[in-house]
Length: 259
Image 1: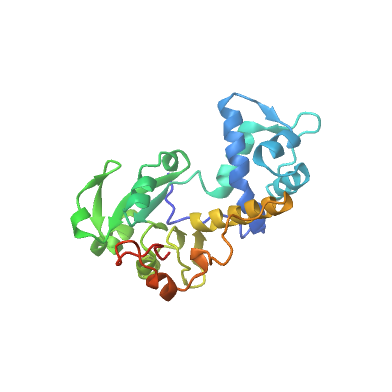
Image 2: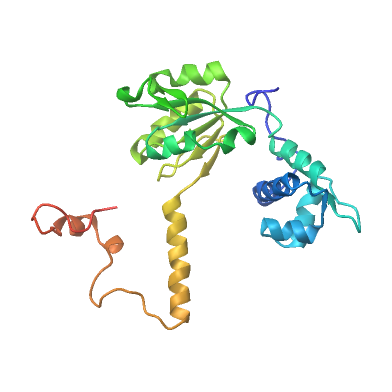
């Protein structure tokens, strides 16, 4: 099986829009569920509903793949699974390194969905010497001193950063210098990378804040005021200095911890 280091996905060269690329995994997930139920064909309306998009957008997306379906029959599920998997590069073996084996990194290491989707966790890496050699998800954690050698030995082109924010950019720079060209960033910071390196950011706190916005808007439409006492500034709106000045009942513990 080919390795990820020697092949790049063909989506850009074939002119597939980024918005379409972002929806392909949604279609693949829905199609895989249909395949597991031995469903042979699916209509554009049914697949669009399962993927959470409208059918016109789905048909437009599939036109970039050269797949138009059969009128009155629909799309062949198994063929589409293969076609989208190939377009996403999932018919290859993609070795991945995870850097930062704290709670989040360990959870990612234990996630069983990587292997079934074409991704092989090649190494777990952490800066804490006490972590070196400890097994996580059946793999020994390796020290960051070995990062470049690990990437070279395994032909890694995808790195996952799950470090604290302060360490993320340095780790990113080392990954890129060692040949990594795609990074999935879980650290709560924006990474600076050179042209030709792709970064996808996953920030759970941002997603929760967006949900909070929608919840507040819905509450406003229903005539319910936000639960904030008059004259009280929400913790997130206070400056770090103001928060540090607030003392707890013991006099030395902030009542509201800074973010």
